[in-house]
Length: 212
Ligand code: URA
Ligand code: SF4
Image (cartoon, rainbow, N blue to C red; front, side, top):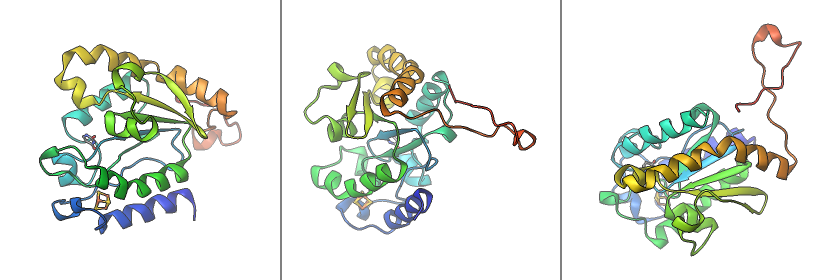
């Protein structure tokens, strides 16, 4: 199976998944979305009201703010993969329970293996804890660490920064560092920037292009 086919297969599975109690109250599960070739994966917490309605990640107020943060880093949604640690909405947006996180983790693990990103950006405590158990987000946010075959950076959750003005400068500064961190991650992993075809007529003269 290609990475793209694996992602499509996972999306199909979570649509009908009944592996934890969250399936009882979900409207639409939210598998996550983005290209199978994404160099960066953003991992949030779980679907909220609007995500549950639409089946897409980060489409509510936090998503609007995430779009601004991405734009500031010179990234568009089309460049990156965005998803969550749980694929179904916790009722009333409560925190996901340990057993729900455990049940849903196998989907996220398969997504990470399929995409094999250079960088994972965790948004909020629950995705941070997957990679840095017991870490304090206020202490580690914005610091890139190698975890296995890739780099992981914890950042505040955009919804937290929307509601607590004091966190906004930190999340802005952390996102602004992304282009530089991606260069560092590529160097550390011995990967080069992806080669992209600019236009059909330039097919004979491919240019080394980077989104940064
Ligand atoms: N908050 C999240 O953590 N994920 C979403 O998809 C939307 C809001
Ligand atoms: Fe399945 Fe994850 Fe949804 Fe639970 S949250 S029902 S494990 S897809």
